Image 1 (cartoon, rainbow, N blue to C red):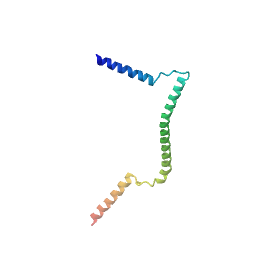
Image 2 (cartoon, rainbow, N blue to C red):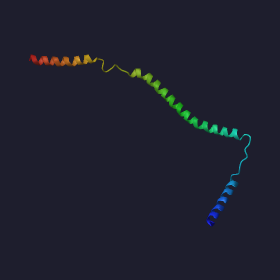
Image 3 (cartoon, rainbow, N blue to C red):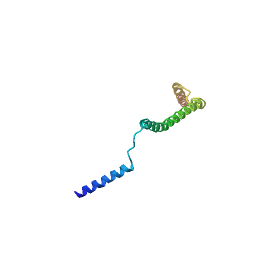
Image 4 (cartoon, rainbow, N blue to C red):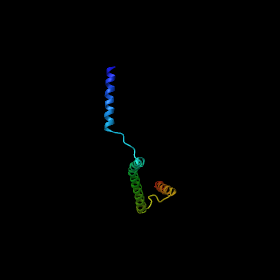
Length: 106
């Protein structure tokens, strides 16, 4: 039991030392407005970082889109396959048919 009393005495001493280090502050008439100003200032500071990051991403996207819109017409060339599927089949079979006919004649 003496140990509990000793710990209680130490705890009371710790609390009294804490109260003397951090006295209770009297609230003034501007306490709440000043508190809200501090809260708003901190909130604006945090959101302004994300707002700037979002604006930078949007501007980079717009710039890249405009660059692609300007360069794509110049980079496009004539299509590689300008024949229809039927034209490709006709060209492939006509050469085989000509080879077949030439081999039969010999």
